[in-house]
Image 1 (cartoon, rainbow, N blue to C red):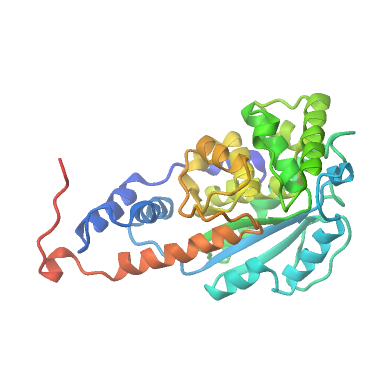
Image 2 (image 1 turned 60 degrees about the horizontal axis):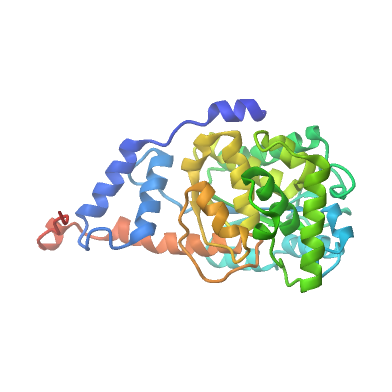
Length: 352
């Protein structure tokens, strides 16, 4: 399935199934709407899976790992070599997202889509497009063809997960410098001021933050990415991890799978996917709101409300995995609670 085939395959979620799930919540013995956004999410998953009694028992988080040439501009606290180290740690199942995922019965798949050196680990999926992107302050981050390949790689992995009969996917990432590329992509797609969408990432000093803002402004001025062409934005100022995530979300929608988003990198990729195919929005659930400045703006652009507002900013997919644990709890009530009639309780009536 290439990019255009993927876009053509996405169809709107089933509103009949959503209505049936909503009615089920009205029938079970608890106050109407009392599980808030979480019960809305169950109804959305029902619509996506086209059944009023969906399951999220088999789920996976797919983490795209890639390096960013803009690190040469001093926009990060640590060096580029950390990307490979953490990727290999993911390959051993020892990173935060892998441990959290394992705790709730979720599989985790690290993907080398663009780490700057070869990485080892039997759990790592090797899909390298190139050894990191170029420094976007000097030249385009990647070619347009490479951006398309990265998106299609994410789509291929979504198809693979669907073939393995996963019920739900989360996207994660690892890439030193990727809050710089995500801020650049966000500014290019939304027209927001660079300073408004640029944060300290993993703990940048004030001087470092100034360098980061300058680097993004330099890249945007040099390349003038077209906000109406998401692929133009991706290849000029994006990252391979962002492109892979965008493809995962688009591919998941094409395969009828719900996606729980993580933080600012994940939401940047989701905005790319939605700009490529607006119908993808109906397949996205916001796990949490990132502490990065662009986090709230991206959620508004995506018209999504997050389950969790906890000051999280680790990345990797950890916020999405945490949100899935909440979905497990609400599914326990949805699947197991008696109806008002079964419990012998008078049903609540909607307020007028």
